[in-house]
Image 1 (cartoon, rainbow, N blue to C red):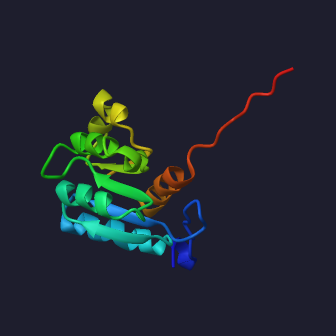
Image 2 (image 1 turned 45 degrees about the horizontal axis):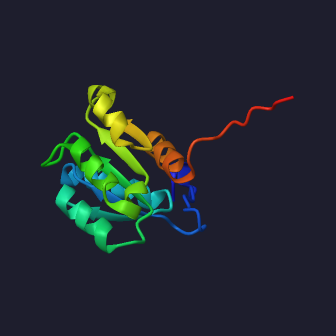
Length: 147
């Protein structure tokens, strides 16, 4: 069940439960993110660090989305996102960045690395759900009317 006791039903583009890689951060942070992702209808796959995250993406083509703690890993989190982007076809995977503070997200390198959405700790379940939804569905596109 999701927030308020109802299932939120995150789905991927095929209408199934999204598989979400949860990478880096403390074990407690990863556990919280995983529990929330499950409550939102996703299927979390938690890996302990960035090397394991890259390995997971190279061997598991069913991962739909990644939640990456970019401020609390054994390596530079922005470099990690850049490494994901260099993986060829898997490099287009949507990434939700989790940051310890807004300064990390303000770094121009962070935006250039290309995350789909971001949350700052401590985040609310609603904030994480919103970021996951935006990353899976993409931003709303407004088409200008001409003529």
